[in-house]
Image (tube, rainbow, N blue to C red; front, top):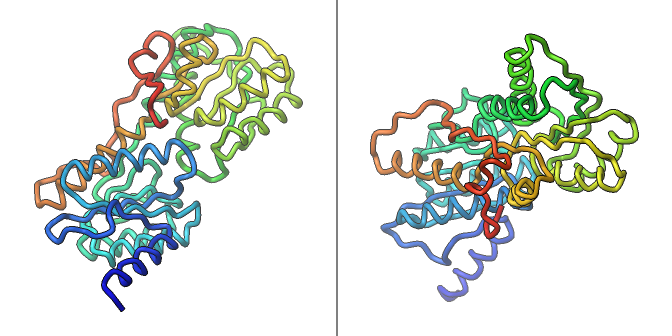
Length: 325
């Protein structure tokens, strides 16, 4: 078999496994960086992957990307494949906070510098740090915006959550709700908040639309929707428009999606919190590459990006219509 045919067969094998390299062959003197994504079927994750890949390439590495396609078992296999292919740095957005612990520990035991980003992994796992936005700090800022703009109005909140049991979703809603209560107490000495219903939107626009339709039918006095991300809230907004419901303030715990920011500029969407996939990904790459080069890395188990609540007063600073996300 010719060397060309061997290369083609190897490339086809990895493509079938959902593993893509930035080039068909790697330079022997270049460091290999692996990026294990739990999914790539949404703008946030695509933006994170592209930013991580660009930053690692800029720093002189060859990059291999794997897409677990939402399958936990596949992500475990992806990590094993990346280690076999000789990556020195592994960036992973884990599909499950517990099930990926073994794969991450095995990678670390093989000498790979592992940095987790975006989603939570059990802190007992052997990785350098988890890079993400602070849900509690962002929540405090978003909660204060709610109280500053809605005053002491009794809040009848419809809650849009991603998926049951997801720790990030819980952290996000808890952060905003705690922020609202604290701001109300500071302002009036009492809290007046009610969750009238919770819907599950699976993090997507269409999921948010369907969940909101049900919440609107079941509750006639909603005056605020709190969503765990922008995508679900964008879908919920369409449901609210179709139902001709007025007086509902739209509040997202994350992410700063460009479609949401465009609506904030127009005064049609209240507030969201910054969870910039590009910033999170670049930070993760910088930490992993530094460690792999033998440089001293002194980072906490969790590395937070700066918290920001984005509203009409500061949206121009963050809105980029050409952004992937």
